[in-house]
Length: 129
Image (cartoon, rainbow, N blue to C red; front, side, top):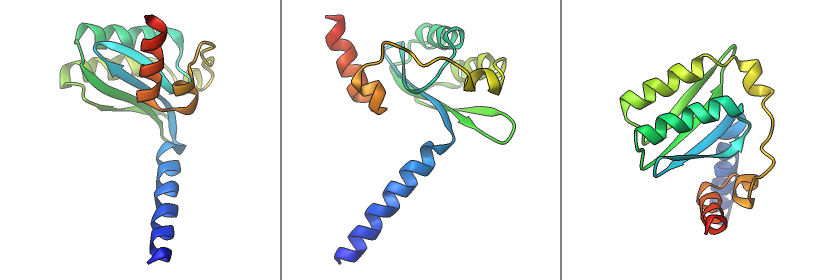
């Protein structure tokens, strides 16, 4: 029984790492605001994405950029079809090399450094007060 538990734990860790291996960035959306949780995003792209989710008043969602062979694609959760298409259109004008060469944000909190969205939002809200 213990061996099965250990195998399941190892499998979960491998799955978790494989899931993030091709991820360029992850953005969490709350109440129409966007925050980079993991990775690097060109500032102009982040501004455009934040504008779309703000106009659409997205309550909760996520936007992930995933690397494929010659390009990147967006995977989204919690975002309706109309705003999602606008996000894909905006994302499509940024080449993969520009995404890979984006600067790392200097003012990241502990949640962003660890890549944990709920902690990043919690710490962000604490500093805003």
